[in-house]
Length: 639
Image (cartoon, rainbow, N blue to C red; front, side):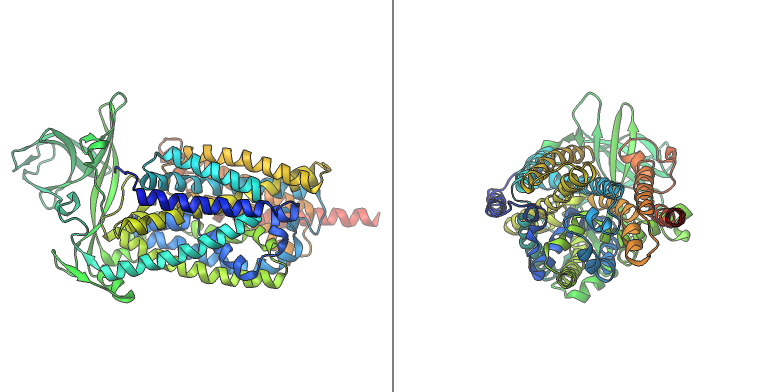
């Protein structure tokens, strides 16, 4: 799709950025000590910290990724919301108060409170850095995706803008600024998502959303006069069929019409060809979108109901919270799938229509294969269970979430903060289901960038709310990236330099090292964002949750509830969880296809979500090593 900057959107965006920088400058004057820089002095009120928690957690993955995944797959995308929210129960009932009592600035300080071991600090610090980097990737991808429709700039510009602003925020003001930015944007995100949902309900549904003359509302079907594969012929003589391609049991036909070459999908049972969209990439020429250069704007947004409760041309008028789902359940949704075709030296990505009953949209199965009757393999089902496990366990082990417990003055405030966060996050995730399904049926989905579904839904209601929603989403990314970089800065300045390497530093020197780390990590995050730009941000966050759940959570849980834990057991558990999960992710089918550009069948790992293996392995390692080293310690003490 082609995007151009709207003056109002640019003005609102600049106002948000200036406000964020103003907050940072104000707090920079007060963040002179290590406590002020890394933990906001520990004086944040629990209600502010609770909303800031929500701000930290409602990242690009939540607003952009989940809404985008729901827009394409329905309930399967909402499963991420359920998993993310359920994970807060572990944080609320298990981690919040004990962690506040044990730590001071960083995750490593809490883990090491019992042992005073340089090895424990080192392992926890490295784990913090790796998890933070993996969580930073989807934030930068979301920033790049957002900046294109908002300002009309390329993806790379979005990554560079976010990276530069965040480095400025964190390098100057640290945790105090990050907390208040998260508080403001977290509150605004929930409020404007609620407003957008109300607009969606008032508008209702239509089989012809938006402009009635748009290509989406005038999709073509070509009747075949010969349905024999290899000899297909159409009744409309203005079309010339050029070539047939059969891939994964689907047949596509390349055809020429009015000088444009595009692709169509064969529906053999109906004896017709249905209109598809395509992007053809040639090693020597310009990329062609539906047979023309992108600038001509022939590639159009999609997502609509082809029938509403059995009626082809229909609209509902306003609906309420419950009839919203009832209408979708009794209607037919046109989703879009994609298939890559090797056409000579060119590669064509063909997007084709997938008519889907609304009732199937509201249950799992469009993305995650879990029903054997619908072709789900054992690996598919294990992959799904493993994903849910990582989402459930990963929340309570994310470094940028854990360090927020140190910004409040007491364990009781930590628990109250978590309760506020659970309420705000729960409301927001409920709204994502409406926003995603709204995008699915409102003709706003950009097939080349599913992450933009929620902001583009807002644009359907006017440029003003689009600009505000996009600016808030941008601030969301700024806040989350800031929190992650603060966590990484603390890991390097306090855990690695001060505690592990025993570098003697004053408070000012520690803050200086933290700021230098922020600059380095920010630059590294920009590079990773560019490398992973084509992946869904929620999917990428799933990997960060897997690593956190594998490397950090076993150590946290066992230290709290098992008195035979040893430092050696903790170190071994973190290393096994970290290296094991990371290795399995890098050898997974999704990384092979989307990063290495290799066939999924060549991947050594049969699943892409390894938490079901790596988390139990880390627990087992901790128990075995702790029992072995505990016995040795006892013998040495007797001698």
